[in-house]
Image 1 (spheres, rainbow, N blue to C red):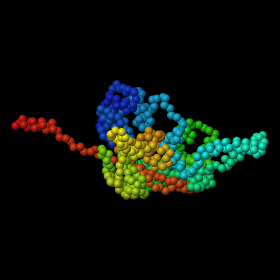
Image 2: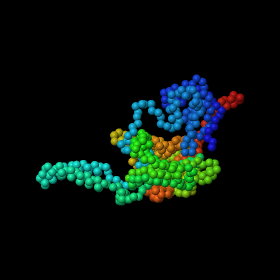
Image 3: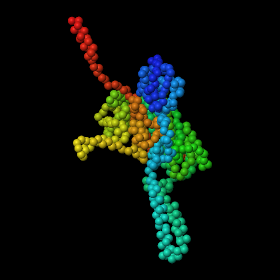
Image 4: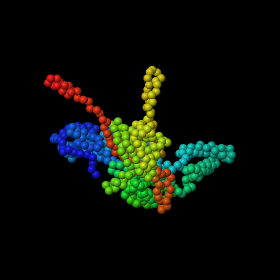
Length: 526
């Protein structure tokens, strides 16, 4: 497929000061001779680095991601000797910038909350099986109370009842052993709906699916997460079939175990090594199977399946029926047009984001559930709009009258992000618009692995994002060839929709100077 970009021969440039400013590094880019570059004339996107002759580096939306086109000859000697070239590459690839301060060191320790990355919170939300466990303060309090009681009880026993103080060498150890046996024999067993988990040998499972679809390239991306809680220590054969709902079938899917991305225990970025207690197991990625996966009693396993499908030209007529859009926007961020989907299931709890605005309806509205074939018309009196960042962060503004003096003060309140939230929709919506919500400055969480979920760059490049919830079947999840039921099953869908950006018409003022000159010439001829 062709890119929406056009060139007009070539151009020569010598001034590269804007490239230096783009990197933010105090490193000069010196050239002895002009550089010949292709001249970009038309493109659908934004200019990252401009020049006197035209754009030098541009970014364009494409499918579920973006494409950065660089017209600069980076193999030239001037660029190869440039100290800021690695930083330039990282910025173009949207990688974190290289830190120039050597004193900045990342700690391998978790934060006080125990969560430092979005993937960790996503894993913790999937691990919510509705099980109530006793607080850690209960056993600590019992241990302290036992230590305080055993001594006085032993003193009263040997002094007032037995009247033989030397027997404390026998009674005190006996009381300590009895207290230990009582504590070990009566553990706080977790319960679910009033039933002890330890008394059941059933495997518990939660599953969530995220489906992305780009309407311009007809690209489908499916990501599925399954969290298992296993009641007994052993090895398990797990099967997660690749059965994606129509019309989001993909030809190739892969399954593997997943974990949190911290550098601590059980994290991806911990220091690697070989230990004698590590056991091996096999992963049949294409078949969706884990063979002889080890698990301890009441431990969990996170399984991730990923499917990707790029539709070719022959399949486009069939996939065009998934969603129909005729959206257009003005420079004032106002949307107009229609959206109509033909999924076999309704879309609920939907929101539509475009540029810096979000469109939504109140709960209980007639448009709260978008059934197959339902037309979503913009503008509509039932559809409300609000600033996207304020909607995500719960920002409110209020004018308060001053207690002293005359006038009013503007008070802005913002809700803190809940890192302990287990609502998957809440987490997924913040992941979808992470940078628009303020990024890590607001959530205080990094996003090392789920960066592809952030659609903020698509919004900046003129795309609209339709996010909503759909219902999917549990799927044939099997452990040791026995099918198990899924406790919590959720699924979300995101559509990346192109928007025809229209410029607001401005009436051109008449050229009064030219008109006066014509009147002067006419009067002179007379």
